[in-house]
Image (cartoon, rainbow, N blue to C red; front, side, top):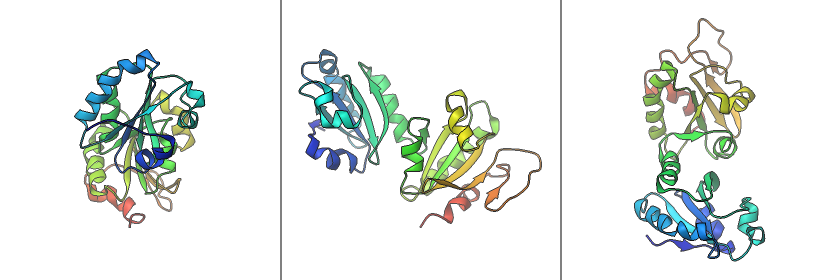
Length: 234
């Protein structure tokens, strides 16, 4: 698929309103690192022809004079920015390798999207559909046992709800503290930017409260996890 250049006027229709993820390469003819990325951009367009759209924003002068660059705070070139559902899902600034950009794309194409401090607001709080957040950790056996169930849930509710993964650790400590994620695994259901229901990680005892279940223990099937979503998914 040929890589097309989009203008300010076309950006909303070609990128923000596009159904599939869109990789936008911000570049300029006067920028040597930008020109070095041209073969890489063409290669990505060919590799992901049926899965994502690849376009360029060609900057004639300083990025500060470009409307799209100002809107997305692009101050240096080149930048590879991946859009999903009208929002920035991830980006890479400066010269990059094919493997690094492919890794960024592959993360966004997985059934369960990885979220962090950077994209939590766009992917979870501003989502137009209910979002199930799986808070897990690589070192937690119970978390890993839930992965197949969470993946299957993502497939079952594809198009009606979103399922994302938030890794519990130092880099997400502020975010986890903000929403009270203190143990793993935790399944938290967000709808319209607020938590509607939660299932907490393995623990002894605990008190059941309204709309909040106490333990992930025994959640061995998609149907169990899906119960949280059914009340909010049409």
